[in-house]
Length: 412
Ligand SMILES: N=CN[C@@H](CCC(=O)O)C(=O)O
Ligand SMILES: [Zn+2]
Picture 1 (cartoon, rainbow, N blue to C red):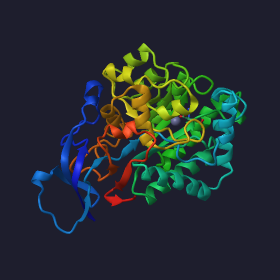
Picture 2: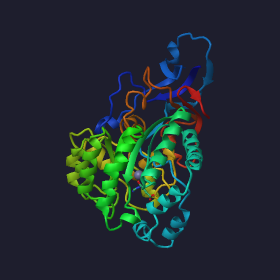
Picture 3: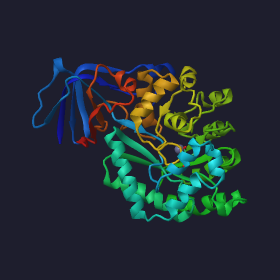
Picture 4: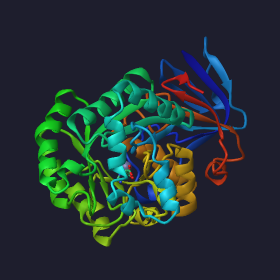
């Protein structure tokens, strides 16, 4: 399949030799070609340039992009897309005054989703998750990370990861998987957290590794969930299976999870709605990327990650959805990019970099995703006719996507 996109108003994120990740001031640069063409063959980006110097190709399908912006598809590096049922009742309870933590303490929250998931068959779980995957692909996501963590038993955690694996086999989108057995403490282990960690380390981890179901390890390092000590133990055990950490830290409290992540060479530390000076110091000079999840802040009415501060400190930043039934029932990366501009004061250039090239880095896909580069996967968004790319976050409530191409195929 060959595609030639012509008369592109502006082709964004064009990098001949892209760096793996963009930090600090570099995030304000978004290289582009105006009045451009882009040639795609066999799922890969072959070449691009200005319409004034367009070579002759044969046997392609032409897409005229007059008035349209073309950019790499979104790289969503943090989701819980595989889950069962929904939690709209908790949403209503929160409107009536209960906090996220109070709902969790009553047996709601993650444990509520775990109960539903344990009762759902693998096939049904696949069908529910597939629906969400199709939806986010149409919204421009071309690479996605999916976590377990709503199983909380060996059987149910494996079920989640097998569903994610099956999605990977059936869809063109790149999927990376993360084992998050340490998402919450199940009721059976309420007064025996160590017993649950033993189960994770001695039974779940070996099975996940044996079936090669995950590349990354995650833990919810937070008061009332797992401590820094638990985090250190799990990440050390997981290293024996070559699982790389991508962890939930600082959502409500800064308890030292960031520096624990950095010490274990985490690829990413995610959430960071609360950030201390020590956290920033720990991240400086490391290869760990902070990941902000502004839709979660929006939905729970909690602080936004101080993205401006992190970038101004010279750090990299990625943006992701956190798609899950409790804190973020939305997988819309367009909303994430807009909210990062509106609430976190990122410029459109910074937000687009954070959601493409840096998102790819945050899930180990820098070589193949996140920029318009020869040889990278042909994953692009073609927008509707818009005045400029800044219009994307500006018109935050409009669907501005005309077409999405993933792996060289038009999926919308
Ligand atoms: N905070 C931990 N995990 C999810 C939400 C879990 C839930 O409420 O179901 C998150 O990233 O926000
Ligand atoms: Zn999450």
